[in-house]
Length: 194
Image (cartoon, rainbow, N blue to C red; front, side, top):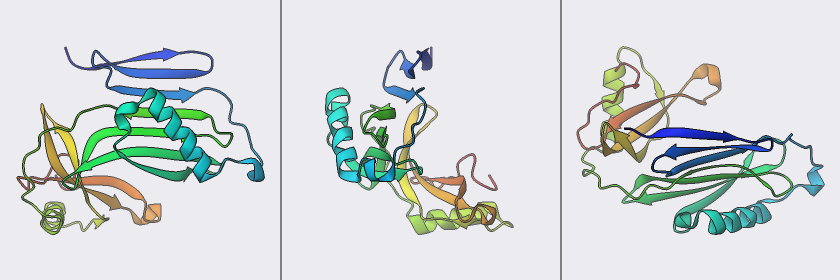
């Protein structure tokens, strides 16, 4: 039996979790979004402090990951995320919290997965870019900056170069992802031209 997701909905929020492992958990508030005057909106530091306190209480396994705070939308919300890297590879552990303008946790998404053992990285970013361009020929995709991530492929974790494919119609925003196995150099499914 594989991993399935169970959803529990209530008046004020919905919760989704993976079963039977319970390693992935998502919550989103169903409360209406309130407009908060700009002068009364929570700033970056207090929003981060609220998120860190919530993390310590509910997700202590994320405490050693790097934390980052960014504005989320135009209503004064903050996206606070925890991610972990090892040897330059983004690991699967994640915690994302959205703190609303009043300082409440509006949503979260968590993935408590231990660092997997990975094959060695034998293909560098420049070689991976060349591999994607060759696979996409005769098209010439506009590739953004790549990053290395541990991704599940079949029943194992692999080091993978991920390139955002930027589209002209989207003002340079990501429209797709091109991926190359960082050990074998194999183009992965979903990459333009694959």
